[in-house]
Length: 163
Image (cartoon, rainbow, N blue to C red; front, side, top):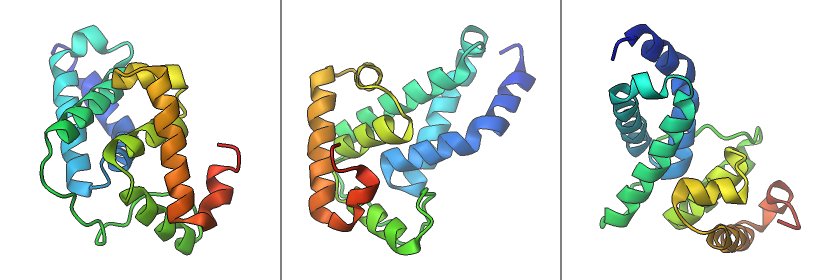
């Protein structure tokens, strides 16, 4: 890695945003930290090749690493009660309801929703990032939103009536 300062600047500038996305993907503070760290290790190894668009590389690496982890994970997810997750909702009741509902989704459903609605990726971009078909993204999004509506009907205004 010849431009260490460029990598350091990237990590300093984009680290918090990457950590928020990682938390939304994993619903676990410690796994989120591990996910960001694993992606940044890969980015550091390939910095000369990716320094023109490092964020896209790091985010894609995080998505793929997260998929790899939930394919291998055999233990139950840990509780997030001690972590105050970064959520856009300003009303604490809504924030807690959303957090609890998201924890009850499958890791795949949560990942698709994060990419589609937090990262604002299209269905095609989400499918590409996860290595699945656009149809799978559509059905997972539909199923995840339906499940959110069932788990927390009071969030209907946040997820939209037609989503």
